[in-house]
Length: 260
Ligand SMILES: Nc1ncnc2c1ncn2[C@@H]1O[C@H](COP(=O)(O)OP(=O)(O)O)[C@@H](O)[C@H]1O
Ligand SMILES: [Mg+2]
Image (cartoon, rainbow, N blue to C red):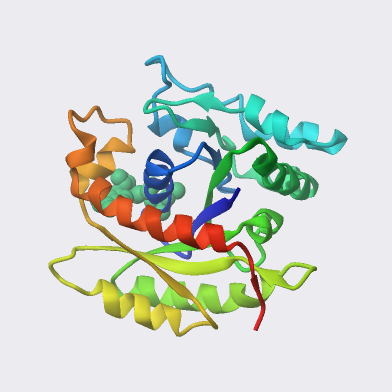
């Protein structure tokens, strides 16, 4: 069982796209939890399994609201809707104000997500852009793997490095364990700046891992933006995604690690 969370430091490097790509290729049953505090966009991007639209009102907000009375893994499953491609999705908040209004409920959501493991379902979290005091810190701390998505340009690298350095200490749980934390670099493979970008950001903290590269691929990204694509498995993005999924599934199997 595992919770794998995707986040970004600044800009829009492709965290949501990476989360949906990984969920689509994940080797076990998986649920996508759209937990971007700024408001989710998965509901607007993925069509429902039956071809209609996902119900954006039926998702995280009612879960966080009812969490005041306790929240279990089954309620998370009940709150999910099947999206095109077969992935189950808990739709996100529709407005940023909702994240703060429900601030006290995030720890219950994190426990419910951790408890899903007993039912054999892994959770891919779209955690959105993360500050150093995020409202959903409990969910990040409960994650087995935290993936910082960045582009390979200088600004993206510097912001990612700063954010990882700051998160290094706050992600530590009461039991002293830390999520496996690493980088996923999105860039043009022909430029070849991804390796250097990953190296610079990894130096930000102790044992920051390298979870791989994703190419810039407009056609591939559109698969996770609601576009109909004849053979998504042939896109460069999906082909590269398989390697990333292998790295993340291996990290997830390693579970939390001891702090140094
Ligand atoms: N690997 C990629 N190649 C090409 N375009 C991408 C890629 N990843 C994301 N995009 C595009 O960039 C925009 C932002 O992506 P998104 O996943 O929403 O970023 P974030 O969640 O970090 O804000 C979207 O239009 C998306 O289709
Ligand atoms: Mg996003």
